[in-house]
Amino acid sequence: MKILLLGAGGFIGSHLVEHLLERGEHEIVGVDITAEKLEGISGSAFTFHELDIHEVPDDLVRESDVVVDLIAYANPSIYVEAPLSVYQLNFEANMRIVHHCVNHGKRLIQYSTSEVYGKAGNNTALYREDESDLVMGPVSKQRWIYAAAKQLLERVIHAYSLQGDLEFTIIRPFNFIGPRIDYLVPAGTMGGPRVFAHFMSALLEGGPMHLVDGGHVHRTFLSIYDANEAFQTVLDRPEARNEIYNFGNPSNDTTIRELSTLMTDIYTRLAGDPPRSEVVEVSGETFYGAGYEDMDRVPPDISKLVALGWEPQHDLAKTLELTIGYYLEQAREAATSA
Ligand code: UDP
Image: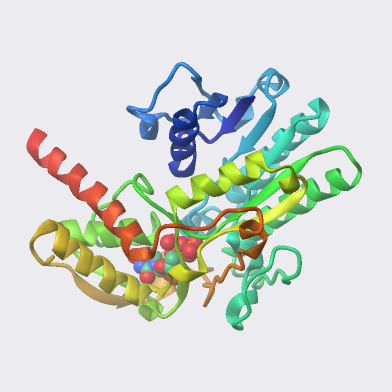
């Protein structure tokens, strides 16, 4: 098959390219505004186009068998700072791709988000793809525009499929983690990348590790390598047509405070020295700005995907060890070449 991978240069996309090239079964056409995370990843079955999503020509869709769409802003500080841009990219621009798929009869594998469940998990139930309610916060808390845009995109894709005009699979990622997850920002920066990158900067530089609102909220992290295998499962299995899947690992549930401790312990073991970083508590408003709200828990039920034969293999400690090891190596290389 020829797979068109939109967002091939991102964290998830670059790992998918690597995974698919290793499997060697398909031709991959990647599109992204940047190829930095694809450095060192190549193969005769891979071609890359440096393009903005608005510039993706209709022909690229027409010439492919499957379209995988990963393009989105997926970082809470952007939801708060630039909510309109989040809607424009995550809904409007992605709708162009949906329309191309409808027009050319192409299967669409759309990456959505665990955030579509919103605050549903503030009780203890696990999120189920086809049963759980999707619960958003008020409009005045603009962080929910991300979840709302993704939810509407899912609903439009589903509606096209009900009409018989589109074959789809929707993937809801739950906090994927692994090498290349984010660029590191100077320790102590507010907003910016996801929590792993902030804690990693604090460990490497000895700066503050910010615990937003005490770090009491829970997240469940999924190794990017387990996420690749989950993708392979929905790509291959005919039962995954016109279905929605949680990609997560409920066994990797942790509070953010526990994450800071676990990362510190692993870093100390790998680096050979304890870090000089210290935990500093900060409010969500100070860290992200007004309009931020958080989810207490994001607990996936994964039985639907497990029924197709997939099972996560990497626990949180192993996943963090691999990822922290990667960033430590990067830091060592940078120090040597400086
Ligand atoms: N967070 C934190 N310190 C940081 C960055 C984030 O305590 O330096 C918190 C954030 O408020 C949220 C959790 O960590 O509760 C996960 O945030 P992230 O941006 O990684 O992803 P989310 O799951 O919220 O999309």
